Amino acid sequence: MIRRRQDRDLDACVAVLADVHTHSGYPHHWPDEPVRWLTPDGLTAAWVAEKDGAVAGHVALCGAEVSRLYVAPAARGAGVGGRLLRAVEAEAAARGLRPVLVVKSTDTAARALYERLGWLRRGTERQDWGTGETVTVHHYEARPVRPAH
Image 1 (tube, one colour):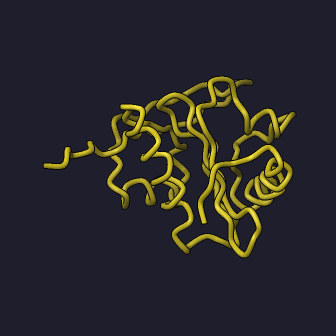
Image 2: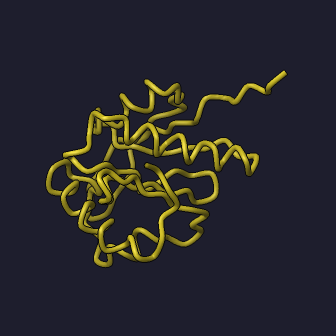
């Protein structure tokens, strides 16, 4: 089940994020304040995925930018990431926005998800992520929504 995130979900979201970070290295740098990281400035909305009553994934929308998308390692492969992304796409469309996101080039599972769902890679660049660390990222944009006739 996908639903809007509530404040009471934040501790569970942080626990899943810690598991994801250990398993997959996302986020790249563990935030000093994980709850604050999950509630960035400009947050439009956030959702959680639940499996058996527990948080299994998370995604946020900040303006047109999709961020903080992650799925618990134990819940992967069941379509959770796709359902979270569809929730963001629906919200963005309702606001007249075409969502975008940035992903590390080494995050092949996330890139495969976006491309499988029809997202379009719009560019690649190298970014300085502090202390001289350079990371290659890809920019994606949701496929255009075709108007209903």
